[in-house]
Image 1 (cartoon, one colour):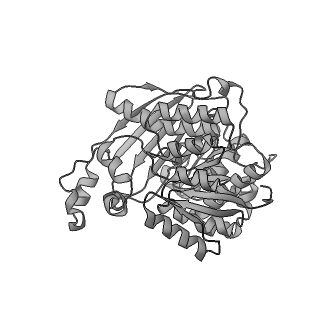
Image 2: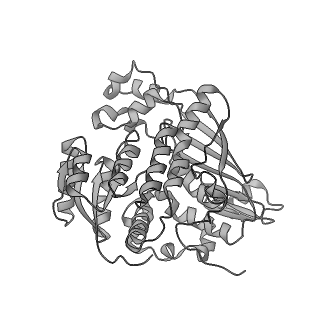
Image 3: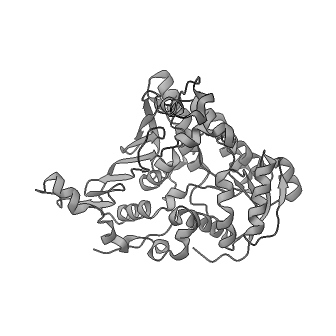
Length: 411
């Protein structure tokens, strides 16, 4: 990534946990000048402004009306970290005013909002990037590099998950004024698909020579939240509520080039965090839970218990395949999610300031976010559903666009 030439005047719209947590990162990168902050809740916006000052920045302007912010401040870039219900609309309104957008992840509610997002981008050509940090993860990029170097052969099957015990966060939604509670009470879907699917989509070329054709979803019963709130007087006010979100929600995606992708949302049962990122090809594969790489023939004749020991955490042997940013990440690992956040915001700044194509674009955002409403439809109607092509056929000729450059290893 090229060194930034100057600071970007950025406004943060959405000062919840994610929006406020990235203030330190933006200031530490010395690439962003936070000129305004906005949230429906004034105290959250004020807290964000306080954090900017504490981090060494000038006190930003404070707003509770993002349209007013857009028209009065006119920042170069808007970082959108609002609720899942609103981040597409907030982004559209910025693009219409010529303000570049860095939009946070989440799921979409319907086809129409995504179609409008794509159309507004196509009309304005205002820079837009979908801020999926897992696409910059060390494990995800190691696996991608091995794929690009042909080490795994032809990719056949991939799996991703968001296994994260969020029972406390969901149950505290009314107190913390967080949107997840409302979703878990009223929807049953793959509500947070892009951590799972984003890195996989990049590997198999979704929107770039490949596309999702259809998906089918299935859900377990919703018992985890009920048991959780019944076990604590703190959440007694939720005991009469019925949660719709299934405890384990699985989705199978079929792709035009023949790959199958498995996704799993698992956020209301006790267990350790994992994205279960897995890539399987004709010559080998990678699994994140054991951080292991296995090539064809290596496992022959080894009993399964011994194989687990042999291959466990062996990915370090393949560090030469890591992209440059992960060869010596330095202090970036301390700036959020082990380095992913820093590299994500560095990438956005590099592309914005140097007029480069954004590596995770509006078509990626639309396709990946569509999984949410399509999965909801699949479960409600108990059927396979078709996945729309937001590129209108252009995916057939669009070249692969990785988020970084990978080393070419001759072996």
